[in-house]
Image: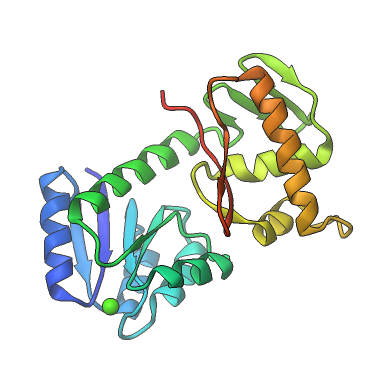
Amino acid sequence: MTRILIVEDEQDIASVLRDYLRHDGYDTEHLADGQQALERIQADPPDLTLLDVMLPGLDGLGVLRGARACTQAPVIMLTARAEEIDRLIGLELGADDYICKPFSPREVVARVRAVLRRTAANAPHASTQGPLVLDETEWNASLHGLPMQLTRREFRLLQALARHPGRIFSRGQLLELAYELVDDVTERAIDSHIKNLRRKLGAASPDHDWIRSVYGIGFSLEAPAR
Ligand code: CA
């Protein structure tokens, strides 16, 4: 059974989430304190964590940072303010999704399902996303079996996006992930590499838009539904 840890100090919200998730077949556990939550995650990581930002003990950012050091299991952040989401993404902590309060519990369940689906698909072969195959050893990329002619920089950018399909990366994050050893790449260059990647992906896969632009934030790779 898939285990979901709900870290939320507002009892009413936690109860509603727990009821909906249980109804959907998930096993849930609830903790209201950030420090306790982190210790729980370190001792026995759940399959997914729903993590409030404002918490007693240790705040959600601290919990996420600590969790990332020991598990890649997905984390969905819950935050009370929409503007907060930009800041959270900017902090580059690598949450898998963000949900703004107030939310409908149905929406949360749908997002949980979606995040679990895409992380499960991603886990065994980090370099394969459906018809997209990235072979790191040879710097070869193919889509629907057709080789793609990518520059190394395009390859690295696509690889960074493909490691976490659906996750939204800022330009700064992509710079760091894809080009950590290359110091002459700028944030503006990311846009031109993205544009080239879009064109090349589109040539082999005209029916699917692989790269999503999120206005004001960045980009994510969207694998086609299977
Ligand atoms: Ca709270």
